Length: 227
Image (tube, rainbow, N blue to C red; front, side, top):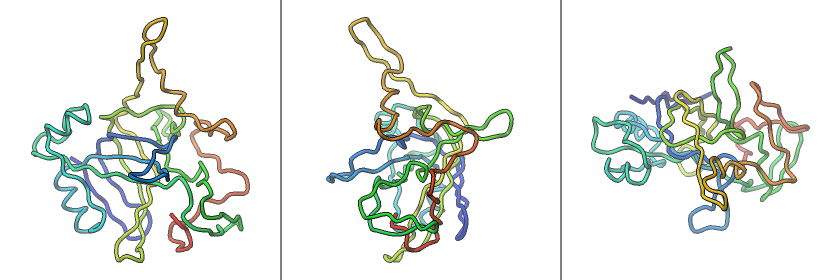
């Protein structure tokens, strides 16, 4: 079973969800747009869907029949006691939608890239009790399960804006693609695509995230933040 824990202030949680798409290192083109975004797609059960719809009236999950779900997601429908699976996509823009200044005084212009350290993180529990940031080092396969942390705030359209914070993996399935080249099958050949452009420094996986110099991650409750 999955579960929604909603808090008006602080973090809200989706617990026990199944991951069907995690793209936090290489942004994808938005639908019918030249702009790009990062995506995390999750699946939850019907009870969680009902609880979600009571709160997030303008953020609608998709209902997918089990047969279609298994055809397109390439995994068994996680909640077999229901006829449909409920899928929601968390989206994060690659660039800022307007200019603003953060609390440290750093200014950002419309169209500037969102700093990598501000993007959601994929966290893997360690035996020591620490959480390892594997966002840039591992690829998450469909069927992995996790808890999702996010924040919300009221927007100008009468709804709630959602900001994904992090993914805490429970059952982690690492994705490794295979391809055939001149010398035969190559395992994990797509992994380099996880790395950022050469001019950008790749954050290393550490138990605690290291912020970029002179940058302060914004407080999501600040109305001046454009994403």
